[in-house]
Image (tube, rainbow, N blue to C red; front, side):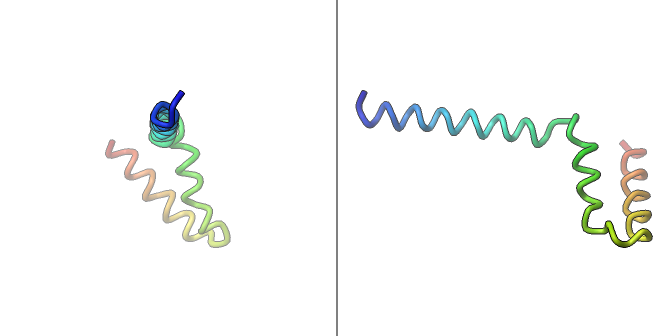
Length: 63
């Protein structure tokens, strides 16, 4: 194996990892987890959580 083959295999591994990560991040099954994570900065403010939750509900009703 020469250096070109090793570099080519490394490129393929990184490309597969990137595609897997992109599919994971944009998966519809992850939406609920990401919606909950968007509320973390507002965890100490109940009014802000209520407002953000209403916005998310209105967005999901439009879809």
